[in-house]
Amino acid sequence: MRTAEIKRNTSETQVEVALNLDGTGAYNIKTGIGFLDHMLEQLAKHSLIDITLRVKGDLHIDMHHSTEDAGIALGQALREALGDKRGIRRYASAYLPMDEALTRAAVDVSGRPYLVWNVAFNAPKIGDMDTELFREWFHAFAQNAYITLHMENLYGDNNHHIAESCYKALARALRGAIEIDPRAADAIPSTKGTLGEAEC
Image (cartoon, rainbow, N blue to C red):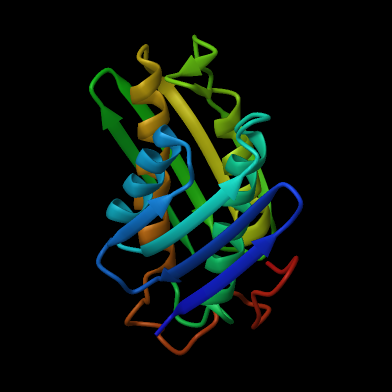
């Protein structure tokens, strides 16, 4: 089983996460931020990654630390669960429409952390959550999962739809990239023979 459990404790947050990459999309997520919970539930459901996540953070200050640290811990758990990445497809992309919004995600499970973020919101908040925090989550996730991730919202007007299409597009791209390729189930998908840190 490709699974991982991560605990991250700082003076700002306490985070516990468990992942099963070969799950059914089951989730049990409580970050203290309602809209972030909703987005991460979409991530689990549409990637078929089982996610259990608990975050206790300094929400009396703001939502920044809880959002960022949730991304850090989830990224670390993904990296650990993938192991040496043997047999994965490595590359995948997805276009995700949600009503008037269309978002594209492209993933390379490369060992090289990088985020390209071409997503703009036209309001400072969705509910109580600052829209600028979505980039913080995606950056923390990509950096700690050691993946290259290109996210682009091609168009859209409704901020809820834009954000949700980002998480669903990531989910579908991840689902394809981490899937075991039956034609190369025992192979590392790199001419280097390894996909560790900073490898290609």
